[in-house]
Amino acid sequence: MSEKTSVAVNAGDSARITREYFDSLLVELRTIDAVKASTEMELFGETFSTPVMVAALSGLDRTRPGGMVDTAKGAAAAGAVMWTGIGGEAELEALIATGAQTVKIIKPYADLDLVFKKLEHAEKSGAIAVGMDTDYVFGGKNNKGFAMEHPVAPKTLNDIKSFVEATKLPFILKGILSERDAGKAMEAGAGGIVVSHHGGGVMDYAVPPLKVLPRIAKIVGKKIPIFVDCGVTRGMDAFKALALGATAVSVGRAVMAGLSKDGADGVRRVLEDITEELRWAMNLTGSSELARIDPEVIWS
Ligand SMILES: Cc1cc2nc3c(=O)[nH]c(=O)nc-3n(C[C@H](O)[C@H](O)[C@H](O)COP(=O)(O)O)c2cc1C
Image (cartoon, rainbow, N blue to C red; front, side, top):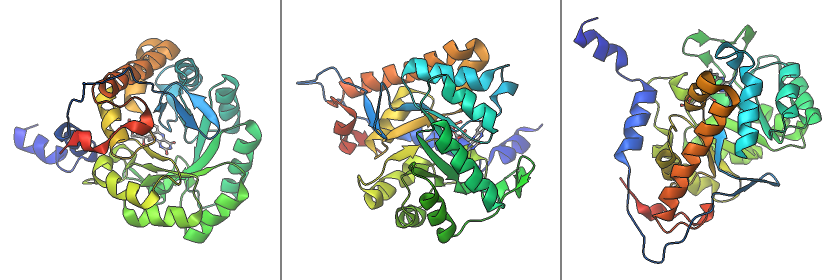
């Protein structure tokens, strides 16, 4: 491939643009009167050791045999929240059986009965929250109209309200990337949002989540948790997201690298390493706890 062609192929890659945006954000030091920081997080009535979570991943048995369950074991060992995406009922039950506090994200299936069935199953199985990746209503860039073999379809605000009402669990909207959709999520009664562009899987030139996050945080206030994913690979990334308004962050592909190498232990280590660097950044910026990270420490 010529250099010109390879640049053209890479143009618009949302994951690359997001990485560049992370790297453009710098952090000031505040070390006088500094204290050792706590990364403890309260979420949905549970206490976690870290705001660094496993992203809504799926199909990890292809990364490593038993990969889904090993990922949940790694999350539980790190005291982190486990999220999962598309997958069957037996799989969700096996993830929860590891002891991992698990959030289930359901695809925006065209068949609404299937959505309601999955909501009911997740609640019965002991998930701590449920949700839907509404950025996937037209499918992926490379799988238009489908989530695996199931057709997907756009959802109205009323559809979303009916999902919120169908479950006692917090209902999270994943793939919010505008002030407009954040406002609609609030109107629907969402129990949380994930500011995300699905790792670039749905559209090129997507706004980096951290670029739109401060505006979304203004709309949401502290009313519901704001999660962020896409490109979080180290503690400094997590710190920047938290400083700009995130309650917690999710890590997808970096966790998969740990899984691939060392199974559950590799997952635990990735989550702990990211948390350790986050704590270090908190120590050095006068942020004694998660709620005390001052957005003013970020220079853009
Ligand atoms: C193998 C794989 C499977 C995924 N499956 C789902 C899914 O079923 N549902 C979903 O909402 N997101 C899914 N995602 C997207 C992730 O939740 C996340 O938004 C994305 O990977 C960006 O985070 P990252 O840059 O840390 O990987 C998947 C991502 C990967 C890599």
